[in-house]
Amino acid sequence: MRILIDIGHPGHVHLFKHFAKEMIKLNHEVLFTVRDKEFEIKLLEHENFDFINFGQHYKTKIGKIFGLLKFSFLSYKTSLKFKPDIYLSHGSIYNALAAFLYRKPNIAFEDTGNYEQVRLYKPFTKTILTSTTFKENYGDKQLKYSGCHELAYLHPDYFKPNETIFHKLGLELYESYYILRFVSWNATHDVGQKGLNIQQKRDLIELLEQTGKVFISAESKLPTEFEKYQIKIKPEDMHDALSYAKLFIGEGATMASECAVLGTPAVYVNSMEAGSIDEQEELGLIYHFRNGDGVVEKVKELLKDEELKSKTKKTSLAFIENNFNVTKFLIWFITNYPKSIKTYNIKNKY
Image (tube, rainbow, N blue to C red; front, side, top):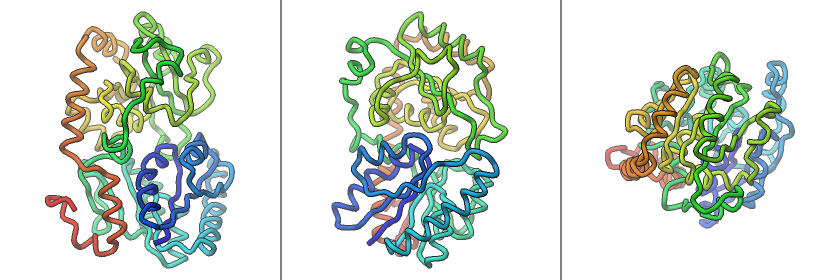
């Protein structure tokens, strides 16, 4: 089987990397396509995957329209050469259009529910895979699994945190530190959403510095006053950093959910709703704020709980136990496709 996987975000590399490695071991061929956006290419290079870089990602509205045409064409052109049997992505319209033109099935993961994206790729997609907690209904094309994307790569079967991250961060072993994550708000699903304002960010840094080191991960260039906090590690080391952090506060749903799986307390600040985030919030793994109001006060409260990290870790392990190893599920689903659509029963798993 020849599988073409499109990448639109660093998290997508993590989502598919163990699946790709296992499929390659089983003598299937896997090719990735990607745009030069954040550090997706560095992650693909680190994993030694075969990939094609379609060029610079466009941020403006006009650029996105041009990119839709350009990247869809390049995806189809790649298809003519690679000859995929199946297309896989996290809701990629480029993959969907190429699959339609090449007359092969397109399988899409979905967890954001962004209407603009979904309405573009859904007509050209055979199956949309979503978590059981996902709130949108996509009809007969939708197939639900128990879990979240982060369980595809942070499940204990695949991920073990490495203590060398303390040295890489310039810290003593087990020294307390915090990670902040600021998004750029340029993605289509970010339109109209909001998180922390500049003063709230300043207040958080001042508070956290009283008990530990502060590191900031950001999608775009930081203001000059925050540059000294920029985390300076390789992209592939970020999950080690999140795993040992005392607390995470950020505007990105992916990192917040990663912390939930890793057992790191997380404060998620974003007006965007997400089913997996809601579930993790109900379990006490994530504290979700729709804007920055009240965040500093909540962080003060959390810092007083000396057992917060251990309690979160215990809850996280129970969460993992009650959900799928998403990579193993995906391997089964793709290798048995399309029969897997009819034989899958979430109650009996797979």
